[in-house]
Length: 95
Image (cartoon, rainbow, N blue to C red):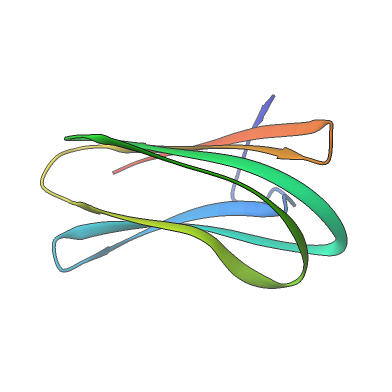
């Protein structure tokens, strides 16, 4: 498994943004070639939430999942992705 970096050419990425006392975690997908991706987003902090999905990405960037949590406590978002059957990577953002 590899850990994502901001310049990695992966089909699924995660970003965070702060707004009105909340942290919004957004998972997006985009690929120049059609491919199936499986993703698992875990967000921890005062509580925990999990979002899992399987989709086919191709063409324009689109939102696959979005989670909003209160920014009153520290937390982390962990995104694990499998592209096709082989390429597995993880991204971890703490807030």
